[in-house]
Length: 282
Image (cartoon, rainbow, N blue to C red; front, side, top):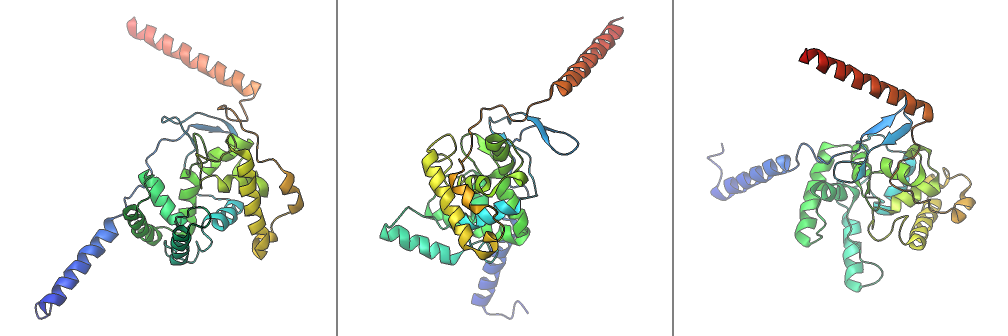
């Protein structure tokens, strides 16, 4: 049957098969191979302490659970049609092109959250037309492999949040000393606007600009009926400071009792190692 087709038709089918095969294998099995911090939690999942990752970043291990507050904030700020497009949003792309050509307002890229996951996985900061096209294709492939919730989790765990802070979990503890699921709307909105320009605006830099961006996002959330119903005491967030910028030490720290227990266990292990070495020598 294949031989009976016209030559042009056969060539088209072969080209289509090659492109389909490339599309299927275009996305690597593992998107992120970056080192993560070692974290210590109690039996209730509360953070006791954490170490900085091998590459000098505060990056907690991947967390598939993304708080609904962050989902509402990040989709409102970065990708309004996240749950409706296949990885690429043509409406946002055309609007961004028109705005960039006209020169009105700030420069926009039209990247969806899925496209940003691809860019983060490749650690590519260059934003030319070729990279944008590549990100668009791989974003569609990403949507074919993972669910929307999984893509959000990949973004939340690997997005930059200013300085050497990577990922929502690390940012929540670094800036607020708490887990993401316990943050207020004002705090979560502050974190949601950081990945957009982490080198220009973060809690340790340009705090007034950060406050304006956060309040702008909260205003958008209040205009959304679904989000507005969830926001409690919404009048208080306008006067809430963005956060207290913290040092490298991750809060909360070990309790004194836990410190003593760990020190005692460490000494016992050392004594056991020394006695074993002596026995071997004898």
